[in-house]
Image 1 (tube, rainbow, N blue to C red):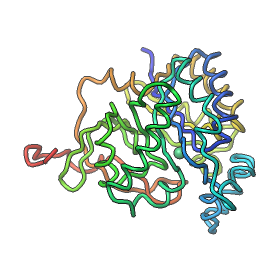
Image 2: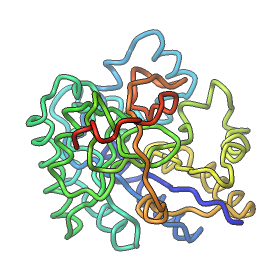
Image 3: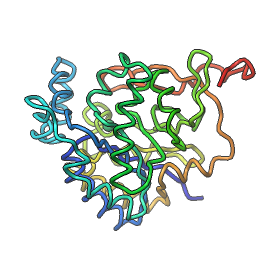
Image 4: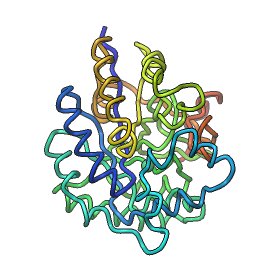
Amino acid sequence: MKTRVGLRIDVDTLRGTRKGVPALLDLLARHQVRATFFFSVGPDNMGRHLWRLVRPAFLVKMFRTKAAGLYGWDILLKGTLCPGPVIGEKSPEPMCRAAKEGHEVGLHAWDHHRWQINVEKLDTAAVAREIRKGYELLEKIIGRAPDCFAAPAWKVTPQALSALEQFPFRFESNCRGTTPFYPVIDRRCYCHPQIPTTLPTYDELVGRQCTPENYNDHLLSLIQPGRFNVLTIHAEAEGIICLDLFDDFLSRAGQRKIGFAPLGEVYAGIPEIEISYMTQATAPGREGWISCQDVLSEPCAHLEELSR
Ligand SMILES: [Zn+2]
């Protein structure tokens, strides 16, 4: 039986959009793979984000993953001195190309940096304004409304989930977990299904459990038939410095009869979506908290009590 993996590609920066996305599109075409691209379309202030994190733990990670090589010095400095460039205005072509070539295209962020450091402080209206700006610009670029969303850094709050409900997204991919689910927080169930990322990312594994040399072996060993599998890669990593590594991964996955699909197709094939709690957790190798499907709690026993 063929094992299927949902492939999600996050694009956080101008450099990832300009350089990583075209390289990935060429690679995916060669392997006849389709994926879901989640684009950040507003100001690229990611340099601010990376410098803000200059703390001992982050420095260790910088050296471990050779961050300057992974992100590029232009990303590290972007937005630190002046407001970052609006990615969707500077470089809309790769977004159009992804849509034209049959990939699913969703919204990742207006301002990735702002979401990542601030989402806990934003109320529903402020998050909705942020999403609206990204939604409208991406719609203009690809000629149709984006119908899915993936939260930056796997961070959502109840306010953010309420804001997201104001948009006609078919599904969202805001967290880590094991199976698609409708999220419940504080006894409220949200109406957009979540397609969680199930596998760790490159920067979470390399330098801890893996070296670049044995990374693909390890990642392939984590993809199990009969399980729900979603892999997230980054245009800034797998599209640039890890491109050859990802090429090798796709070749070897093909030999093992592992197929890839956009998240919307994986989601469409699920007969029934369960309801799970969503909580905050930490992931090894990742800074700060992330949203996570709570697989340890009992699934909601009193559905009738939940307001939707
Ligand atoms: Zn991101």
